[in-house]
Image (cartoon, rainbow, N blue to C red):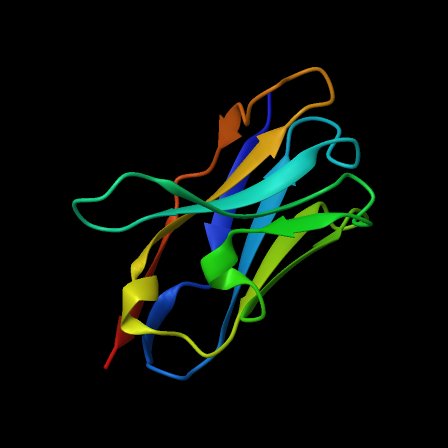
Length: 119
């Protein structure tokens, strides 16, 4: 089992930056691929970014490239999402997720943290 707890959300203005954190516990973290997803009101959950177990490979949704950066600290069992140049359309609940080496999908999810960007 993996427990994931997100933090760092809040209310910001357009153009501001915000850093989300996701703390993991319960099992080995350093071998898992970690990801961030988001869900806006009335919309389906969408992929934001993912990072390999070593942190050497990252992948972003097109709309986040150049504005968001995912990173991880395996010693702290924490993954981060640095968000810059935030837009009102970035308003959503942001979720952290973990995918073990043997899984094809992200199987462990946090409860989410709300990010609201005002115009």
